[in-house]
Amino acid sequence: MAKRLLTSDDKSLIRALRLEKGWGSLRMITEFPQRQWKRSTLNDLIKKIDETGDTNRKQGSGRPRSVRTADNIAKVEELISSQEGQPGTSKSPREIERETGISRRTVQRIAKFDLRLKTFRRREVQLLSHADRVKRLAACKRLSRRLTVAKLARTWFTDEKIFTVQTPTNSQNDRVYANVAVKRDIPSERLLKGRKLFSQSIMHSVAVSQLGKSSLVFVLL
Image (cartoon, rainbow, N blue to C red; front, side):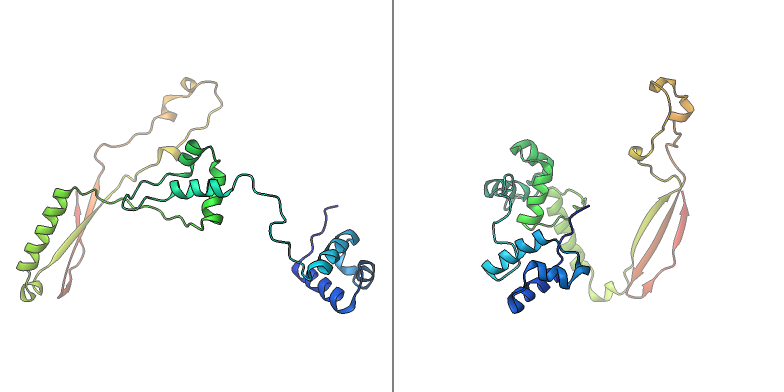
């Protein structure tokens, strides 16, 4: 039979009975049989209450840390975050494991519980060179000079999106299960999946301005 752990309500009640009434473990078990307390568990808790007046575990009374040490925490903190002015220089838990020998799971626990870090998914954006940035800045300045308040009221901005009939597939999730010894024993029609080089698609286009928005325009490609 599994040992029943004391709940916070149990501990509060036992503490009150000990401090206010001076009851021992036998009296508590007799008065509260429905709680199903073990006498040895009560004796340990009563001893702690008599010594400290509290039911909480003493600071540092647990098993000493062997992996999440201060030295390992410092190593993980140095490697898991990007350096100042050098975005993208951080290392993943797997890379830290290879470099330091600290297990990936331990690295994740250090990041979550010791360093209090949160994870955020990175977004893919267009990589711009210095020349690209200069050109874009110059183009924005030209547009700012050309688009006066009067012209802006009559300017329409358009955008479009292409949807293909043939949806993309993830090859990692497209598998074939077969009860054969080698792959060549599987018929080719089960392993090959046809895909058009140029799938039929349709383009949607819309325009907006200060006057409002246009209707959707559909163009079959």
